[in-house]
Image (cartoon, rainbow, N blue to C red; front, side, top):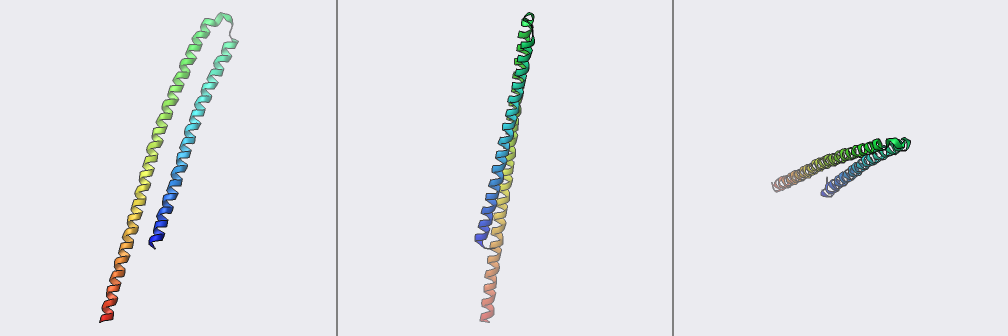
Length: 140
């Protein structure tokens, strides 16, 4: 294998890994966006439920409605906080996983390059040895 083809092979491997990492980043971003959309939909649904109950109730229940309104706000806030924490945790986990993958792939590439260099050096030594042997045989 020539040094040029090794270089192309390593470059091809680098490009392939870059494409894989780019795809993973896009998927992770998409997953996080989906989670955020689900959170917004849940908040919207809870808000609609609250307003429907409010419309159905009679004037005599205004005090009770204000209590329910406060309870819903707290519930929405708790849900929002829960999802924000969940999203932050997922982002951290994805960043850690991405870093692990990047380190693992960099290690594989480094090992591959080192192995290829060793093969080239061994082939060069064998070539030199063969030349020396040929010169010996020619001079004999």
